Length: 254
Image 1 (tube, helix red, strand yellow):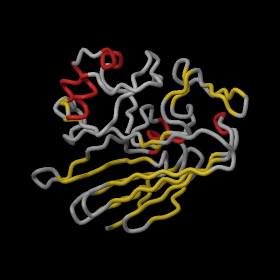
Image 2 (cartoon, one colour):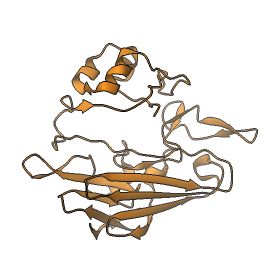
Image 3 (tube, rainbow, N blue to C red):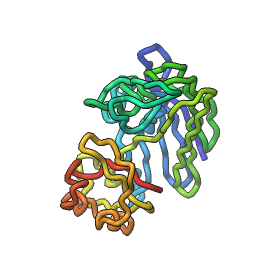
Image 4 (spheres, helix red, strand yellow):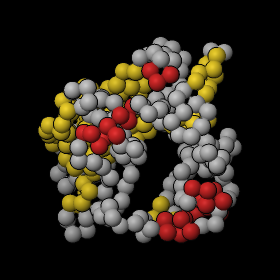
């Protein structure tokens, strides 16, 4: 494994942003930057041995600080949607920013995807980043420390791990928000991609995008996704949940 670090730019709060590159002997490289603890690129050999980037990303720090689709970033303090930006905590109603219609999404407009993360470990195969979120940050109660670990293995596996600690009861839901196009050509649709997930059901969503509390394990679309499905067929499916968002924007039970 090899690790390199290069200047990437300067953040809006005047911190030096680096581009870290993990690489192995099989030709796979992963680039990660401090803003949003974001995956900038994932380059893998194609069938002819040429290196192709399969993860959507940006070229500059200001783009990552804007990043309307949160390409490659860690979303939090709470990934996905909270209806009306409200939840109950210690007998009180916590009110969060409404940054997507009547919902809070991904922790708000100043969520973790737009923050500078400190790199606290850089070894040959592993990178660890840390973010401290103080009590009241974006409306969330409790001091929260989050650590994200990226590991690249010699069998071309990229492992993403998250951990969070707090001394106060709070809510926390983290994910990496990467978008992929396996063709390596980001102008080409992903209709010819095949999607398969080992899941135990799909949570239907309301029209506002917030999931229901009951899981769907039986519908034809759910069964197809477990077995594998061409995305072109998925996008054309008449299932009401697919038509609701013209595709998938759903949580799965794993």
